[in-house]
Length: 159
Length: 193
Image 1 (cartoon, each protein chain N blue to C red):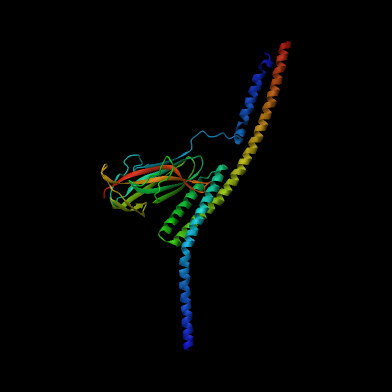
Image 2: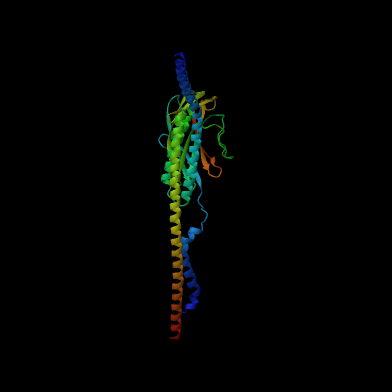
């Protein structure tokens, strides 16, 4: 009976000890997780900005994307504040939110860039065709008009 | 009228017309360098949104509001950072001739993305905690920061002087980091106790 009691106490002790160790382990990695989350968020926001710049260069309207990026850096700034006061859980949560906004922006920027490039290509092809046709028509029209004037001046000279 | 006499004018006229028609397409391929200057603006306005009546004599704990703004004329959407720094009379300011920032750590930062030809402005509310000769904390936009700056009595201007200044930094894609953009604005403050 005493052996059973001892086993019961031992099991309870092990359960409590394991919970304590888990909490301690969680607290120990929490700062690393927070730092890593901050680093990830910063990287994603910068990467999103780069893609937004590419979309802008392709001719896309990026006003909405920049507003979202400002939202992302605002949340990242809150995450840094939380980190400064040692609230690592809040830091990780806010940094992850910032990263998510950055990822969305990057995704939208890629779509806008592709759309702008495709529209730009269409415009360019149309413009080139229209210009070539116009130049050919002007050249042909000018030549025809020149011949007409020449013929008229010759007829006038004969008369 | 002899058409042959006007042949040259006729050819020039036709070519000019062709060039006019083809100009929009040529513009797609030929990019002329822009003659307009590329730059960024940084400003600081007083409580009434004017460049006058800036806070000067400040008391312990009293809150003041100024407005800090940025204008982007760089020709592309920029990623800016504004570093807010606090110094006494002997600590270094940024050096405009060598384009180097102040070596002091920033007390507060603003991060912003700004489209070309757009401006951004935000209120900046601050107050000090401490004595005229030693400022321990600054509260900026409801957040508390430890600064621990001391100042000595300025015999000439009769006061304990500190300066709050704002440096503009620009994200550089090539170096993958912020670079000091060689612009700063500051506010001299006489802390009166």
